[in-house]
Length: 126
Image (cartoon, rainbow, N blue to C red):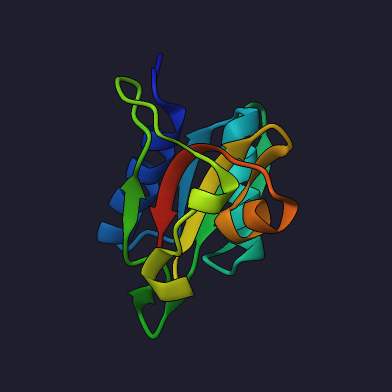
């Protein structure tokens, strides 16, 4: 059993990119599905599907290089990081993606600022 499902998701994606695999498999939870949905909407992955409590993620490559070059976990099980909507940072001057778990669900930092909700700062991706 994995204690930190977000860290597990990021590690599986990072390892699959390092091995130049076309897809990776992650245990399915609502949090994982929400994060993967955001990655799909922001064009960081090709597609994903869920079958039998397993999410299969098809990774995206541009000119044989991964679309995701950096995955960074911010909030950890020992130290949770929470941000008010005014404190939400821009990731890589707006080129990256910050993911937050808010009272209105999992969303990007840009969307959280627009909806004026803060929450737990999960990770950065670019």
